[in-house]
Length: 296
Image 1 (cartoon, rainbow, N blue to C red):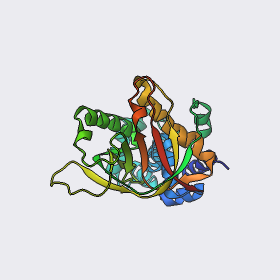
Image 2: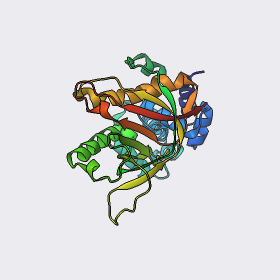
Image 3: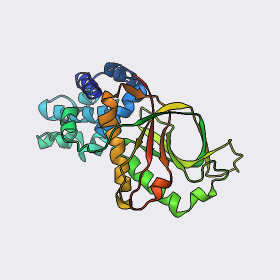
């Protein structure tokens, strides 16, 4: 069973247990993956974290129950894991733009978050990106740079990271980073992942030889990335205006097309983006995405 089928199996498991308490480790075990790999694979395949998917599916199922039955609203809320009428109403209104009571009076359920079918998503994926990585062992690296906190949910990270890069470049923040080991190679690093919420931090910076003494109040942030084995993917050479899109499409293809049949899992250490001289060619920009891996 490949990775797509294993995640789909977990989606079916979720459907059968929406009224039960569900935890990330339990769902990862259904897919026979580590919790971290399952978290990243699910998010990249569906566009949301698994816990956010569960919340959305519960709200959708609860909305259906409001129309299909005459059950008390509080009973429906409690059945689908909402601790109070107020909590349920707040979450319901955020998604359906109306209260549960008003929704019931409409007399018609319009699904907003249907069950995901990964086979259908795969059939409509465009592909077209070469997925033959180089496998490399990299030693521990020390990185100094600037950090932003963002989320995998609702594509927020794409917007936040793009805006952060724009600020970084416009304000010349890279020039304020001292003692660069490789001045021509900037790094984008994904750290501090929260598998439950989908929140993580993105660090833009350079490799340094040792941890610096930072002045109080400095925006600079230091991180150590442990030694790891990486699958290194190079993005297609594209004009500058297509570079950001090319990076996002390559990220998607790694998890959608390569990981499910690769025999590898994510090693749960930071992911690296590497921008060197190839990223400076306005006619044919490229960069490397380095994913830490281990055998499944």
